[in-house]
Image: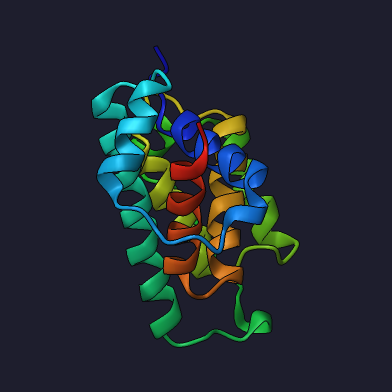
Length: 162
């Protein structure tokens, strides 16, 4: 049985990628998608946690979209990770996040969204592979300012995948 929030989200992304032509179909409700995920071998509590995680990402993106934009040249802050963050996010992942900020892929707000979403995974230790998926999802949601379209896309393609 699959027990990881990231595995659920990756499964949804893979299903969405394989069903690109069917995106125009009507959107399904969450109950159907959750049922299909459970049929695919995901535990009910992990599926619920994954949907909560996605909901949190949506809320974070709404905050990002409505808050004041920071000029990239003014985006020079120092991030000190809390003891809880350092205990749950590996050093490799922390360095990865900071390097993405340093080269300009993440701004300070996006960095904080990534860290928040990593902590929402409720894993004992977040490793680099999970972090890369989280960063990808956060960047995808930023690029597509209308996060409801991404959610609808995932829901629609999941219901048509068998």
